[in-house]
Length: 595
Ligand code: OXD
Ligand code: MN
Image (cartoon, rainbow, N blue to C red; front, side, top):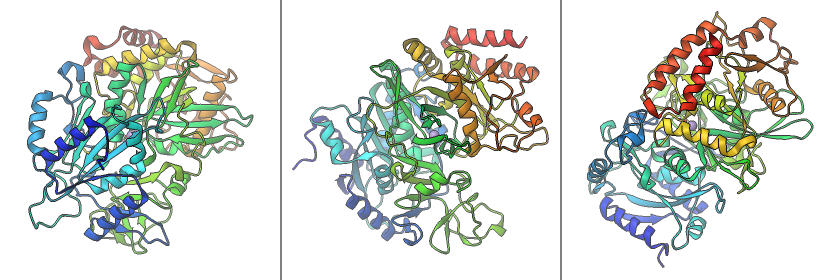
């Protein structure tokens, strides 16, 4: 029996097999049986360690190669037909040249390995917002992670039928085996041979040389953001680096929030927040990516294209994110954590200390040695359905109607706790000028402050200026049904260097103010940078915070903002005449308000 009646898919799989020359080809059916068999094989080969089932049932730990621990932005390419289409913030290579180079690398690259064909759906199968991808990979680690992160297998092939549309995603770890050669625990290619390539006009992804996270699980950053953002622009929808949550008020009114933050700003924590204010409830819909289309009622409807969480482990604890800790109790994959003497995992920032274990490099470890036990970008992969506060509607094919957009970043100074934009255009300006201090999720980002528009700088598959224009166009289409836009900064510090805001569950206080603004209930005061909560409009009941701290949290320092303006202007100048006139107008209006 052929695996599919889809002629184009069969032809592509045959073509890739002929090029990569694997020992065998396996079509993934997405079954539990398949997951278990691959996991057992990886344990037997020494690349995975089974965790103590009494501590963490059906879970495994992997250690990656020390050179392959995060996304590699310097090796990530948007190979559009012209350099101009990719814009100055993407690495561009001529697609013909890149394909030639990569074909050379792919030639025979799967020797000694199995080639897996993974049919996957981003989003609930059958949703008008979902898309189907096919990932071909020689990494069983990728297969098991894709089982958790996406919807995989026969049901996807059934939905694809004979001629459905799919996005081809080719991946190889880039480490062919000679006959008789023993495999290493984490095969990958050296950095200069890694390529994470996107061909946006063809909806095509080619990844080579890395087995880690966003470089290898191609449904996530490559498809759901880089390729999808380009498709969304063409087709009139939005693919954003946003969590999605539902906040329900004590009266039972539901608000749906989508929020964009760069890596390392507590996005997963916010997505699963436990409000400290009585009567308010959060349900999680997604923690990383939102795909949004205008629905029949004219409102923006969002789905989470993923089915799991690929979260940063260090810093995750019952204090910072109890719901994530519950989500990873079982059936999870861990990468680059400490393996404890009890056969469980541990990382820096977990609730209880660990006195001895094996670190992410496989070496005996104690905290006294002064080295981190887990890599700062160590990850957990866990099924979203295991989150105790997963929203009952998280798989609704129609999506949830978005009321609020939030942008933000990690800023120890200048930026207040929360501002509301004056209107849509000003909100787009807030998103476009978002900035954050350093991250561990990318190997090669070293700047102290990075402007990261819409948290999409590493993920926008086309020219940033055109992306901004797309946001303005979406606002025009949505009209008075457009979500309200806010900007937050949980990370402001006092002049003495102390956090001013407690964060975590108390962030619900800020979300409450936003919801009340949407409902027309909360007061705000105008400032040169946006609307700020009026005195007493933020619910601070039960919080130990002084008046002086609140004043500092909301302070707008005109001189600092003028300096900010100069920095923003310089950042924008790289986009030249692709900066929409409406964005320039926002800049001018801000200058005027600050003068
Ligand atoms: C991620 C990232 O891994 O944004 O989600 O880097
Ligand atoms: Mn992310």
